[in-house]
Image (cartoon, rainbow, N blue to C red; front, side, top):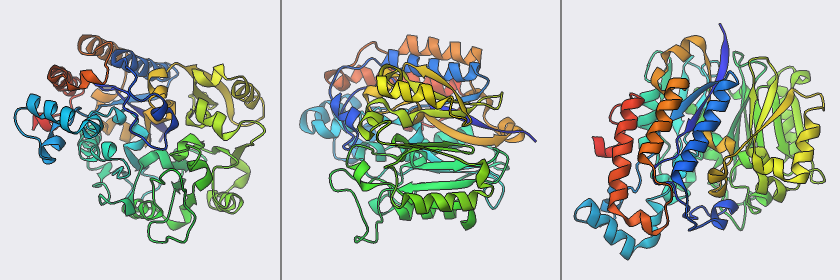
Length: 446
């Protein structure tokens, strides 16, 4: 049976804005409070999805969250009509209000951790939504994320869904942004790499000083247990505290993997040599494994952050060749562009580089890899997916029309307090759930 990797990209929501909420994310902080263009952002994201589909990849769509989150504001003591709640929160607690308006669900690499059926004890694909406890604005997402994932992958014969981990920083979980799977083939048993920033129960271990380590070792262990993974096929790797303090807030800003390729910066990990030896040993045939290390003299950590060199997607094309999907910022940076030009001729499986304009996402702190959630699956599992979320020409055209009908061209910080924006957003999301046949996944529909 044929196995392949499908990508599910997050649709940018109607209230896409730059709030600068993510401490430790340099791009997010640098663009705080600038006006955004939700329509352009959503159309850019759809164009990227269409490009992957045109390359022969299986591409799906993951719905955004409802924002502003009026229900959380009510939990925090704001009362009255929805318009009253929004007005009071915007005036009395502007920082809280900006957080409940966050556009962060567009980065679906943080939505969940997924283990393919070939790796799990019960032979099902397992999903655990990330609790995202380190950031208040992201901690609002997992309940809705769980409902959306269950509506997309709704066949109990093939898919197993878990509740997100306890809502506490000791089990801080940032999802697939800190998870990579290496394998000889998508249909072979793989090695799952769980990357973490700190040990929650051992304060004597190294940890960053300037920026938070969002993902814990204990969360990695818990997800591995929930998914029924074999110890001999799991590797836990600590992200370097020094690179976190430089602005590398997730592993996918400093490393990315696909099949038998791990593409990473030399400063990415603690005990790098020891841990990569463990990866080789557990992978099996180390001669098939390509560990592509980028050295400081080739690309610095800061250059990688500025361009999101490692937040690129590495995909296996139908031809069997691998390609890197990079933001245009990589193309426009002389040193990074030169590195990618020579990488394709180094004899690794990566033979192509494709550049995409995702500036609206980049300015808010996420590149191409942030926008997608990967699911390795078989043809049979593919048929069990909600087919309405899988991109084709008809859905692409329908979603473009939907965006052009419902999205604003510009949103400023002041616009977020406009109660009409909430009405517009709910109207758009209600129609979206009908297009994607998701059912009542949003609180306002329940």
